Structures are given as structure tokens and as C-alpha cells.
Length: 191
Image (cartoon, rainbow, N blue to C red; front, side, top):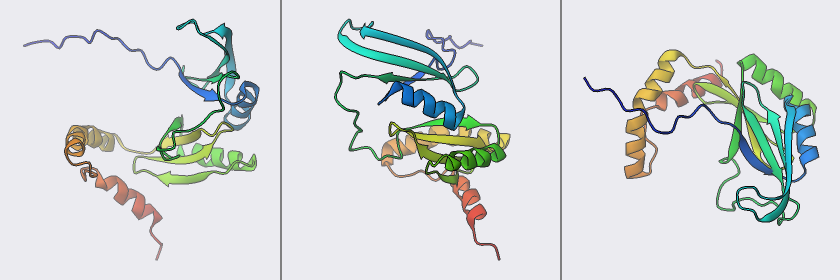
């Protein structure tokens, strides 16, 4: 019996995910008020440590729970923030986990109460989500897992075949259509 060789890169999770922001203070205040995140750390430099180039920045870090850190850079010397015009607004987003569907609905009520436009909940078969934009134009998703262990196992089982079919056809594989059937059934008109 052969033993699998350990991969030379040993990951321990995501240290932080970093995005650009328009205003560091406004961003810290918004994420605290809207999502309850705690501002933990800031780095500010005139020169980029990895490249040495002159580009003053403020790098802020927010606690998203469970050791997950969300970070932002304010770059006053760079051109105004833009978006990739060839990528739809719904594609690039940050999804944060909430503990239950009830917590998701409570979060929506809170966020709407702050005057933020919220889309959803959207049913994805194994989780439900709400969507909204932060003051920098980044799409944020809150997601509550609702799937069963068997559903997650089935998704893991069909994932390789789905990827292979997609890579060959560039059309949506149908291996997990049951996810959409679950969502449609919940949204069907009641008789």
C-alpha cells in the first residue's frame, strides 16, 4: 500500500483577504455598524514593503469571526477605484457565513433598517443568501448553510465530473440540478 505524499505547501486557512477601499475610516465604521466587525489592526507606509515603490497607503484589518480577517487598502495616490467592465457586478463578491437562516433574516432586517438595499434571501439549495453593496461598491453576501451531510457529500462526489464536462462544453452540467429543484419548490405558489 502506498501512502500519499504530503503537498509541500501546508495551508492553515486564509490569513486575510484584501480589497481596495475609497476611505479607510468610512469603511471601518460601515463594517462595524452594518456587520458588527471589530477593527483590529492598521499598517500605514509610504513605500510598499514587497516592491519598495513609493505609494502611500493605509491597510486596515477587520475581524470577521473564527480567525478570518477582512482587510482593505486606501490608496490616495492612485487613480480612483474602478471595476472590471467585462465582469458583471454579481460575480466578484465577499461571502460571509452566518449561523442559521433565522440569523440571516435578522441580519437582513438590521441592514435594511440602516438604509442599505438588500437582495434576497436567495435559495441555493444547500444555503440561503442575502446580497448588498458596501460603500466601496464591493458586493457582500451573507450566507446560511441549510444543507444536509448527504447533500454536501453528493456535491463533492459529482464535482469532478461537473468540472470536466464544463471544461469540454462550456455549458452548465446537470449533475446537481436537484439544488435548483429544492429552491424552486420553496418559491412555488402555495395552493
